Amino acid sequence: MADKERPHEIKSDPAKHGDPDKSPEYDGVGEETKYAYDDSRKLGVTGAVFLIPNKMIGTGIFSTPSGIFAATGAVGVSLMLWVIGTYSPTLHPEGEAEWDIQLERVYRHPKYLATCVLASQMLLLGFSSGNSLAFGRYILFASGSAAPDGWAARGIAVACVTFSVLLHSIFPKWGIRLSNVLGIFKVAILTFIVFSGFAALAGHRKVPNPHNFDKAFRQETGDGYGGGGAYAYSTALLRIIYSYKGWENANYVLGEIKKPRKTLTIAAPLAVGGVTILYVLANVAYFAAIPKSDLAKSEVIVASLFFRNVFGNSAGARSLPAFVALSTLGNVLAVSFAHARLNQEFAKEGWLHFSRFRASNRPFNAPATALFLHWVVTIIVLLAPPAGPAYNFIVDLYTHPGAWINGFVVAGLIYLQSSKREDWVLPWHTYLPISILYFLANIFLAIVPFIPPTGNWNAEGYPFNVFSVVGVGVLLLGVMYWNCWTRV
Image (cartoon, rainbow, N blue to C red; front, side):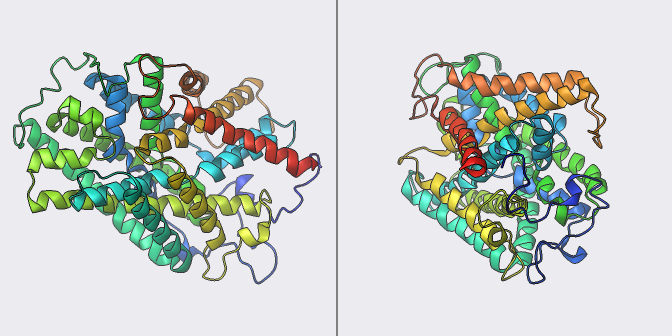
């Protein structure tokens, strides 16, 4: 069966095999089930610009700087890694939406195995758990909770993702509108942090000068720090990549973008370039107001500590974390919108059981069944870890398997470039040295987390290799699914 057509394939999107700007609409099977969207529902340059940063600017920049600094122990190294982290969107411009095609073109035998592994990663790890958890913790912090952690935060997180999925399922246009509004809002919040950081650098803060930029490359050691080394740098980069995730968000929904190639040529550089500048300046702001020891242990609520140290404990200052929570809600809306469409595409291609049902847009002309699948995975990842700090584990689990997929994809790209295959023509060109650099970076991120770090092996509250083992296990589930699907 591996050499036959997919058994319950609905209809392949012609945009994947030709010019996406010229591909016809397609309806799937039957008149009553419509998979295509008319132009009134499609996004232009403005919508695509907002769609990208609305996922990029989520919880990452408001939360991960703590784990990144704790892993590296040096201010200068942390800032350098934030700049280096831009390699992901700049070296892999086509995005994850085209990876299944690249993998199938290179890894042809066994047939469909590569796509099943990719589908396993996308379906089982394409969750909104980390963003939803951060929403819960910021809400609790804004309400005055002394310990914004544990099951209370997870309960709020469940409500957050449930609201997002229901809104997109029942009122899809309002879901997009609210997502766009919150996209503007979160850019404003991040810009506010940047300018507040300038004020903190000038001495306008409620705490003494932390002197974090003195001897910026000196490594801090002790409790709460990762001790440096390859393991620490690999986990720090994984968390930075998590913060930059979203650059590929528009690629998930090419069928809902007007003239996607032309639109993304304009929208993607604007969105990614602007977000990168804001990220680096936001980190400078955090270091200008938060002492190193506090920053290393702040976990998710970095932005809350920043607001408290700059503006004090006034009522206005306490309301600022609520604004960050709203920005994370926008991220959950954007992620659930995009990943549900990705789930729906897998169903259209026949990779899921009950594909016609899962690809349906009924009853509100929205992919409700695909959204429900996204909700189920998010809830499981939210509630499965034991009580206590879980954010870093969720972030690492989200990003680590992607390094393996990236490595296989770029290895295939190098093979195609070197062999000059005539049946493989890309609408873009990547220089071979850049591809090799990207390959080596992902091999580093994929393998090093399995190597024991120096110091405490359970510094995060769980074994150092648990996220890498679980992540690779998810990829192996794809192999098991392929075996059952094609042979059993």
